[in-house]
Image 1 (cartoon, rainbow, N blue to C red):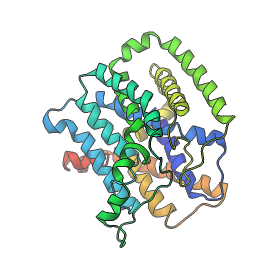
Image 2: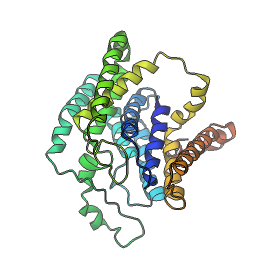
Image 3: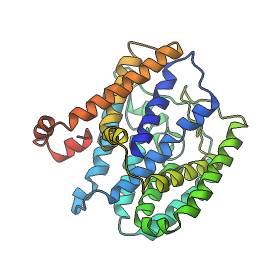
Image 4: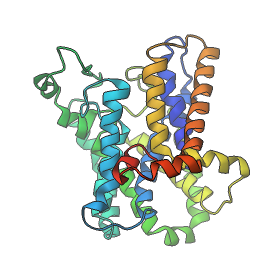
Length: 329
């Protein structure tokens, strides 16, 4: 499932770089389903990792936060801790889920509460649809400029992936891992409801007017409303219960390296978009856009596969654990 989320994310994040290709509504909806699944799986992964003690418990969360800052500074060349892309949200989710690791009931309760009240709460504040960034190495990149853009509000309510309500998906992932065996007892019934719910909600959204694109990005959850919350939950439920008992095919097994190296994939794709597509080559036609996406797929698959080569593993094993986690090695 993580591999699927990554593949959709790569497409969604490349589409904005073509100003002449207008994505159809069905593609916008499909691309909008990557983020909730990816965030859900980040919460689920807390229970797949080995148990640590003391400050080391928070190494994964700290590593993702440092990776987010690294991507902003080096790949996008902007002031960090301002727009809050998905890595910042995943880091926040890892901090909270790690703290609540032994409290599944509290985790589930907080997730449900946030899903219920977050869209209502967000509606009480003005949503800044336009995203203003601060390029590094310019006269505008000052602390006063950073503060004037109210980064705390971006982090909480109107950044790319604000804590409210997105962190609820990470909490749901953690709660699902806790109660997985109980949930699987009702697998067929839940799957039926999930499929029907997804089909109905997708039809409703595609027959209406979708929200405008935010800075060219195709996702329809700016801001995230109840409709997209529900369709995202149905999507996650269906995929989680459908794929869990299934055995992987040989083709999907080869692609699973993207899931295992998801952080490395994210960093690689950011450099590809920030340094090559944005700086050197802008696709203007559908053929050029398709080629750019295909090349991105090939690049992240190559980097991920090489990272698991024995010679690379033996070399990176000498690195500090935190540094390895930052780059997803």
